[in-house]
Length: 293
Image (cartoon, rainbow, N blue to C red):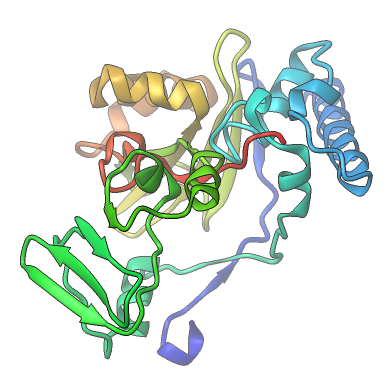
């Protein structure tokens, strides 16, 4: 990133934790830390044994903190419930640390990195003819021929027949795509006045209200506006997508109000954004998540 002229910020600040509207609850924070650690240990043990089952099968949910650990590692990480999360696949994933923020935006960085590459937006691949000396890809703007094609669309597009292959893909490829459904992890972004979120740099915020799914929030302060980026995943994300942006904004704001108090409502500074990746016909979700087995 820096070689392209983009500033980066390390993700080092400890997340703020608010449980039932209050902070600094030592017993609750300790219970949550233990539940998260226990979940990770069970995943690691299953992975080292080569055990490929649903995470929910090996990690009990005795109390609310266990349920939160399941939400943090399932819906809020992989975009699926732990009942559909493969222990072996999850164990094999490499988490890169430390991570870094790009204040100018990852989109700007990607555009700069690939500026020399010809890119056609709004040009969906509809048909791929392959098996001969050339590959031919049909799009609404015409066809392209090449010696090879690299297919990088989400597996759900292939599994649902969103692209026609001529001849059809081998059965094992089709089965592999079907076994990698897309998890849903959305972002609900709410803008506030610059100083409203009371943080000097990017910082995490985890909000736990007894009757609600936990909210994983990234606070992003700015000179003109500050953003609260609320992550939602799994079945909860898909339910909010079905209800629409208004319901998503209301849910996210209610979670923030439980952490900041009712005065935050008056600090809102414009309309929000809801990604709705699961409803995007070109994505059908956020991440692929291997089924158990």
